[in-house]
Image (tube, rainbow, N blue to C red; front, side, top):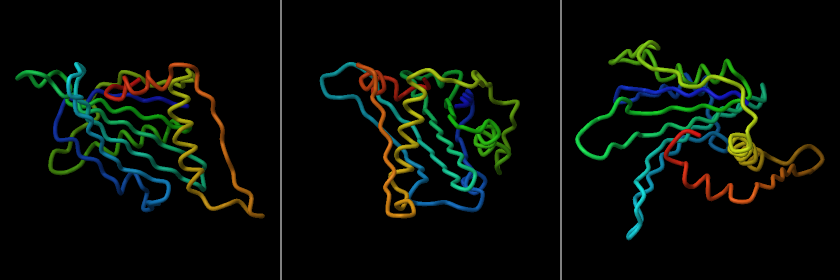
Length: 174
């Protein structure tokens, strides 16, 4: 799948859902989900806040999975970046389009030159593939049974320790 990651140095971050949805939003498969995971009592660690966006185009067979991390800073400094936005997709053009859905929005009209791409490549490493497959599984599970009453199922066996690694990395792009 194609991976696109950008550092976003401004706040607020506006997202044009209409642009992203291309006029259609399916509540069974598409998601706009905000997560906040506080520090656990008695635990070290840090708080995490991120936004997950998933858009599935069944006609083209394209899945977009976006993960926008709020870079929460300890102390007074805002830091060099306010957000990190990562996109996984099986279509490079749609991945770039998802990033564009955060640009040229009034009243700020932020430009592409204001963000810095830190990754833009095709990936096949197990962690990224597992995250993408989890979203494929979620989309497919919500679909109506195939013609003839067959139900499609996907199985994926994760390597040992992968789930703990995922929990630890929710507040960052992988």
